[in-house]
Amino acid sequence: WWDRVGPATKDPITGVTESFLADSSPNKINLGVGAYRDDEGRPVVLRCVREAEASIAGSEFLESVSAAVSSKFVGESVKLVYGSDSDIVKEGRVAGVQALSGTGACRLFAEFQRHFHPDSRIYLPDPTWSNHHNIWKDAQVAERTFHYYDPVSKGLNFSALIDDVKNAPDGSFFLLHPCAHNPTGVDPTEEQWREISYQFKVKNHFPFFDMAYQGFASGDLDKDARAIRIFLKDDHLVGCAQSFAKNMGLYGHRVGCLSILCADSNQVGSIRSQLQRIARAMYSSPPVHGVLLVSTILSDPYLKSLWIEEVKNMANRIRGMRTTLQDSLERLDSPLNWEHITNQVGMFCFSGLTPDQVDRLAREFHIYMTRDGRISMAGVTTGNVSYLANAIHETTRS
Ligand code: LMR
Image (cartoon, rainbow, N blue to C red):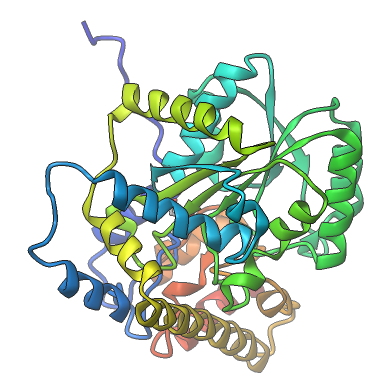
């Protein structure tokens, strides 16, 4: 039955974790997966999560998530995207469903796209999170890429991006990272977002936002939703995948939300029920515990403000490490320019290291990252930053 089945290609991100775990060196550093770590390199359970956990202990229905919890969760999640006092939310124009974190939200949307626009394609930024390619491919939606990153400036290739937006057939689907672009850490400026939104309007393109790192770019949840708000001002209909894996440290609980902004509130019931139908055939319903935590935090003013503070602290720690890493490389008299480390934002630094240099870092220094040279800045700590800077210097000097 299964003779033809060979091993799958290693995932470029989770494969890094496997190699890291197999290394017995005490100096090893994991800069692979984009999950937050504290300054000791440990995964973090946020205080707001601990307090929410204590407050729901014993009260949970373990059979299934109740409609009330689920709609509270969706209601609170969409406010983070569309704005807490947005008319769109008040008018009930958002069809939202709980999803299996950001990946599940993207996959659900890809399935929905294929059902209702079977001949459409998805335009993905070049580069993008590696799993985006798998998600739309497995949902049998053809993909194209659009220009995004400029390896020379290590910033945005804005003019090529705009050309691709203009040259795509009218009414195309585009995936956009609204903040903290993964893997490059390069975000358009506010003015550039306005121009992108304008060109999308001219071309009647559909923007689908994958917001996996809200809060990590600026430390402020609203500021990180600015790109989406610009599109809303221009009256776009949008879709959005949200993940609480990073900004609430709930990676293992798979808590996310997929929302689609509808033309009017009449459309909401149809779209939501279709999303629920697709989810039902794939996995029936998502798990209960994480969603209960998130809805408890977002609907309690004290816990929510605690969370906002904790997000700011996580973003600040990462920003601080960017500065220290850049300073350390400059102090070593590196002949290379490392300004992009602090120009880029969010969890990742697209270092410019080549696959060979990445391999050497793993082999000789026990430092692990994806082969595209993406550094998860969350893995950099006060304790390992000078070891890392030295290793990068050694690897790039010759
Ligand atoms: C990453 O890019 O490292 C994160 O989004 C985690 C993941 O699941 O890939």
